[in-house]
Every structure is written in structure tokens, then in C-alpha cells.
Amino acid sequence: MPAPFNFPDAAPAAAVSVHIGHGESIANAGLSALLASSPQVRLTAAADGADVIVTDYADALARLEHTARQTGRVMIVSQREREWDIRTAISAGVHGYLPQRCAEAELMTAVQALGHGRRYFNPELLERAMQHMASDSLTLRESQVLELLAMGCCNKRIAIALDIGVGTVKTHVKSLFHKLGATARTHAVVLATQRGMVS
Image 1: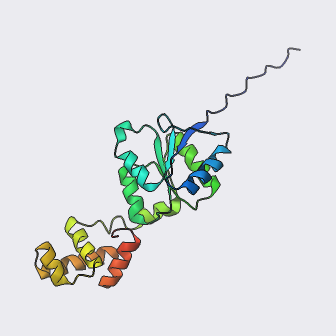
Image 2: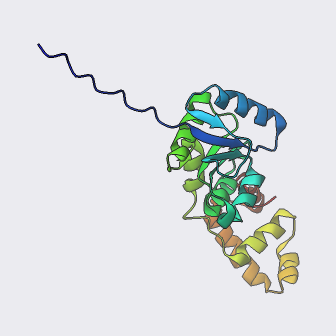
Image 3: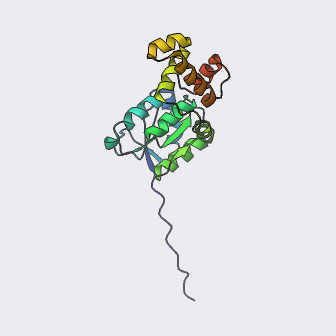
């Protein structure tokens, strides 16, 4: 009786090379410790050539400004969870976004997804970012009016600052209320601040 043929074991999947460049030292140490424990991840000191770069919000956006020199896929791990911040990052071309409070399992899932050419966004943050996308896309003038509202300016002062009529200011304010779902000036400013639309 012929001996059974043994198929060779499938080659193990190559580990994803990850560079951690988070600006917060404690977060950087925590991410390094978590990812170093996985055999599917290989940490690298250099960002050049890494499959995935795990970093903070500001560094990610700075890296993505120089797309031609950025080869790795960029993932943000941040405490910045306002929808406007998330939407800004998505528009800038970030490949992944996790809240700093995420579970270890989700971090691993995200790194593997990016390492294999996919994107990964925390579902809660993604839903928050998409929730008002259609309704609160502001025009430049509306954004200017909103900034002045946040500074406590009345319609007359806004009109003077922007060199437009008071009636035009009222029209923009009404449009802001509609887009933000606000019922008053203070409410509009609160909603806009929560979403990161004003500082």
C-alpha cells in the first residue's frame, strides 16, 4: 500500500511591518507593547518602507500632505473624536482611524486590514462623521458667519466685519440653523463646537 502523500504546510502569512510614531509618549509606549505581542506584526523603527504607520492626528495629516513621499498606509489613533476632525482626516486620505480608547482586538484588526491594502475606521466614529455630511456642508460665507457667531458677534457686527448687509447675515444665520439642526444662535455654536467646526 503506497504511503499517503503529505501536502506541504502552507507558508505562514508575512507579518505586517508597522512603524509607531505617536506624539504622546504614553500612547506610543502602549501601542508598541500591544503590537509587539503579536506574531503577525513586525515593528520597525523607520517609517520608510513600513506597511502601516500608526500615529496621532496632527502627524498623520502632515504626512498625508506629502503623499508622493508617503508609501505606508497611515492610521490615526487619537482622542480627537469630533465628526469634523474625522471627516477632515478622511478627506486628507487617511487609511484608518481609531479612538485612543479602542480595544486591543480592534487595534489588531485595523493594523491587519491596512497591512493588506484595505481601510479600517472605528464604526462608531465613522457613523458620527457621516451623520450630518449631507446637511452641514457649509459655504465659505456660512463658515465665516459661524466663526463670528462663536465669537459672540451680533448680526450688525458680523455685517460690518464681512462687509455685507444685515439682511444677508440673517439669511446666512437661518441657513446655519437649518444645516446644523439648531434652534438658536447659542445652540448653533454649541453644535458646531461639538462637531469641531469651530474652535
